[in-house]
Length: 181
Image 1: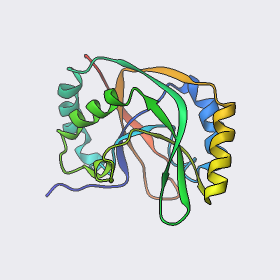
Image 2: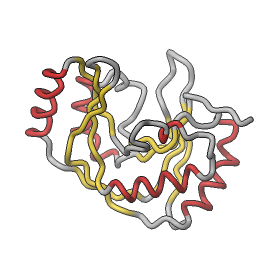
Image 3: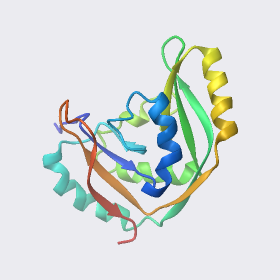
Image 4: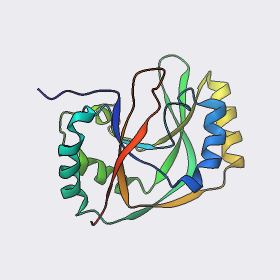
C-alpha cells in the first residue's frame, strides 16, 4: 500500500510578486503563516519525497494536456469547523478550471484523495487565517473584503512541495511541473 505523509503536498502557488497583500493578512491571522507559502492545495497529504522523481514524470504526462489559465482572488469565504472555529480563505475563480486540474492530478495518486473527502467535495481555496466566534468571523470577513484589491495571475504549473520535522518544518518547493511542456 502506498504511503501518504503530511510533509508533502501538490499546490498552486501565486507568483511571489503578488504575495505581499496575502502575507500581510496571513501574518496577522494564520497560525500556519511560517510553515506554508500562499497556496491553493491540490493534493494533501501526498507521498514521501523519495517517490517525487517517479511522480514528477507522471505529473508531466498529465500536465502536458493542461492549458494555462488565469485565476482571480477577489472574494473572501470561510469554512466552519467544530463549534465556532472558522478558517477564512480567498476564493479562486474560476473554480471549474482548478477542480478539473485537481481531478487530473488525483488520477496519478488515487489514494491521496483527502481534499475530496469533505462534505462539499474539493473546494479550491487559499487560506488566510483562522478565527473563533461567529461575530468575530462576520466582522473580519467584512473588514478584509472592504480593503481587498483583487489579484489575478496565470496558473501555468503546479508545485511539488516538502518539509522536514520541526523546528525546520517550513515547506519548500521541490520542483514545478509546467503545463503544455
